Image (cartoon, rainbow, N blue to C red):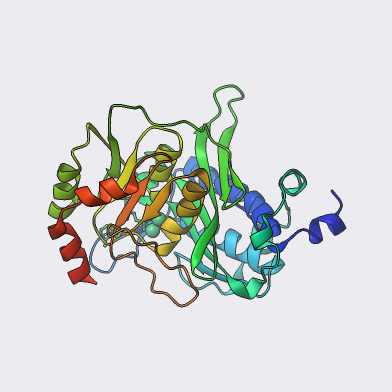
Length: 317
Ligand SMILES: Nc1ncnc2c1ncn2[C@@H]1O[C@H](COP(=O)(O)OS(=O)(=O)O)[C@@H](OP(=O)(O)O)[C@H]1O
Ligand SMILES: [Mg+2]
Ligand SMILES: [Mg+2]
Ligand SMILES: [Mg+2]
């Protein structure tokens, strides 16, 4: 595809195609920094330990620097705070655009006339930093989510330490756009006659645990990262993701929500409401996360969540 043809594709498709290439580069950097053996961790937590590594910082620069260069009026919000674009080294800027994506997929009618001012991009440059530091590298993902007005419509999840069984290639990129579909993973339904719940590996508390108890799952799969947990739903390894706590932020859920919902699943808070991803919202997802895979009854799981859990999260707001 010529540069001119790529430039004539609808904006949302171009942002996705750019983000596919940018996320791949971020994944390379995440692997490279791990291979140096020095993650250069700093604690950015106010009350609790909240690690930030060289990879979180560098990947945010890659993603925000590259998208801002191509899409000047796009509002981009990243976990690691505001970026001074003039300080981002040129070698971190990705100009590539995934032309195969543009050639293969057609923009859904409802998103054809979107302008940059209608969009917010939510960036988690490295989701699962605790797991990256602890060596659970499969849990690590790069998340780029795109919201149209208040609603999450598109997302990219790049998993840098996924190893393809046939080619041994490291890294894979999963994407989803509402009304178009999803790609990049092994689409599978979770097993019937069994309920598998995925939840936090490292942020449990009494309410988180009491809520899991009340769901009465047959198995509980404790893993790190919002991106990786939603991947469990997309690949049929779990039926639901339950986290009855504040802690997740908009950059954690924006991309996974769009991909899951483009696949037929649902991601809401613990009260059944979708989060708002507009340009001026607060970052924390104060009322937790309930996500269900395609074909799983979201409403009936919502009903299993104790009233005490719901009340306690509303009170914390
Ligand atoms: N304050 C507070 N209270 C409870 N839980 C919290 C808090 N801050 C972060 N979290 C949870 O920590 C996990 C990692 O957070 P993040 O996804 O924001 O971090 S990162 O992207 O890995 O840097 C993520 O959950 P899990 O990955 O499920 O453990 C967040 O929901
Ligand atoms: Mg995160
Ligand atoms: Mg992060
Ligand atoms: Mg973090």
